[in-house]
Length: 571
View 1 (tube, helix red, strand yellow):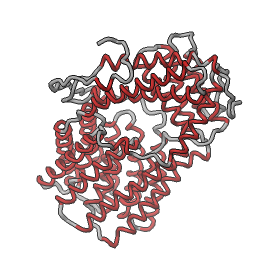
View 2 (cartoon, rainbow, N blue to C red):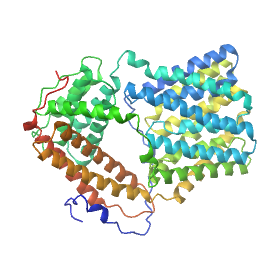
View 3 (spheres, rainbow, N blue to C red):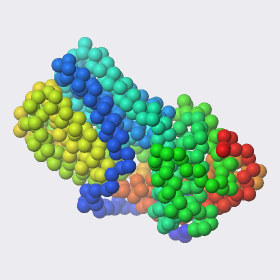
View 4 (cartoon, rainbow, N blue to C red):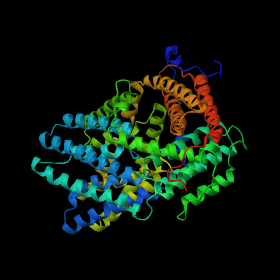
């Protein structure tokens, strides 16, 4: 296939030939390789410790540690939203708290109405599937749906009476409200912190791309710039700091779309220096004025106003529609969790919810990533069981020791999980096992044996379901993304070539093209990791990306002569 871009409007008529299913190789060692820690790993780690410590110690003082499972459901909400600006974080974490309470309410009501293990497993699998698809559609996470599934599945197998449910839900909502305050507390010190980090990442990615403008670095820079724009657009009213950040993103954008060094580009060293200052606690660096910056900021204001106008009407229908690629993943989750739970129940395991959670944690964007997570989860859980065996005698020296052990492993899990999921699971596993100790001591051998069996069976059943439930919609998503990219590129070219086009229209079209390129790369990566599907249009995908980046570069060059619109709030 030629590298010549396909004209918009013709792509939908071209259908990919159906090819026989192909079995792709699966990675093993690479899935377990450690990566550098996240630059913000300490934020969720400290947040969950603070959000858990206060309820834990309060229940300890009251002598009611048996209620920890209900307060922990709310405290774990402090893990979410740390990459979002505070205005949006407030809404997102509030939604997480309400979603957590809703899942818990269904579980508690089911547990109080029936003791049938078959029914409990079926409800647990259904909840896991719903939680998976809703979290993916809303793009909430990490940690995504796994925390919701852990809480709701554990509550299904906890003794419960209908009259206790309101009080238990009140504990969850109270702890969740405190977790909400914890996640928003940093705004009192540094209200533009999330925006500064997002812009710093965009500058760093643009510096890498400017130094080595290969396709991989260009795609990474486009994604980082897109995230930075979305963060700034969702951050609320403009402030002097956000104005400076917007100018910096304009510089990062110009660096990654420049066709060659020296043509509208910024030196990588200067970009890195700006990134370091932006991450710091001092003033945001002020880049030199460039042609088109006034138009850019004018367009940002108009786009922010439009975004606020439609924010209340935004729904998840795009991610949950009839043709959504998330639906096969939801079916995988439902079947895998049910199969894992029933298999463990048939073998006489007393806590099949561990198998349900193990299976639910495996399902990622595609089958290759799910295989990686299967390896990581199995290794991490088995090593975590050994850690639990060592720590258990210490935790049984007293209630305070038990609380401290749980808090320590909660911090360690978030500190390690960004290096690799299996390393974080080494800390998550003993914490999950220690939670059972709040309700009373259990034989160590029974806990360890059940957890090992649940891990192995849950991972095997979960991955088996992933291989049996195909996701042929992944390639269809690539086709739709190609069509959208062609339309966005045509719109950007029309707006850039029209001297009468408003600055708002030009800049919005360029950002829409960047967003479509990010979606195209994500769709291509997802489809590349799926089995049993049609061949990917790799040449056409590559041609669309090249054409899109050329259009971005061309429109960036044409911005200079058009810098005639007034700047709203620019300095």
